[in-house]
Image (cartoon, one colour):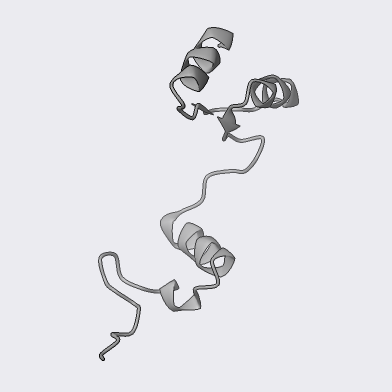
Length: 78
């Protein structure tokens, strides 16, 4: 993993480690500069819950309940 992180850094790439379940893994991978995701940080959620979470985080309540592919932003005419 050290070599992968070194190569990615030299190529100006981001490494994302998946499946992190233990604090020891989190500590080691973040010390290498990796982004991480896994059960340790949060359980999977369905599409609707993820959309609500992200919409609230972005200050975009208009996205909650929007249909996929729809454009919930109001049209601006000049």
